[in-house]
Length: 141
Image 1 (cartoon, one colour):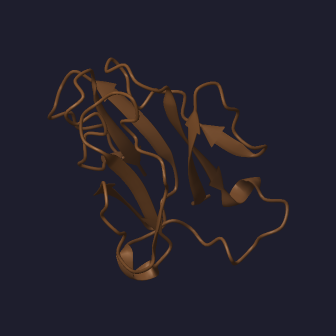
Image 2: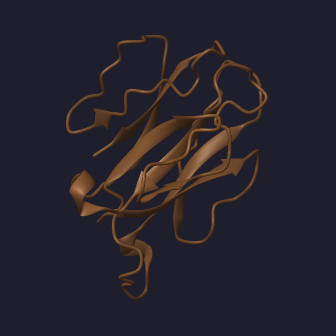
């Protein structure tokens, strides 16, 4: 199984059929909009679609920052309404950027140095940066 698509849901917006919503608010403890990641895996597709190869890397960009070549930026500020830094997610399917992402989760913690249990790994950007509240990290396997 591999993650092939990523989106940001707002408020009580429902994930599309076959997608998995990570039910952890990206603005936890900071106010602002209720935002959630949702992802699709190749195991949820009835027929494989080679146009949707696995995600191999996810990065976080600042306001006005263009994604590197080969990355697709999600046009939703992950700190919307909470103040703090403007943070946008971008992903690539380029095999040059790493191995396939198999699963995603979000950690909400009071510990800036939080490290998830193996086999999970943490992307190093606090998605609540500058907004207060919990430290919010996207995790991947």
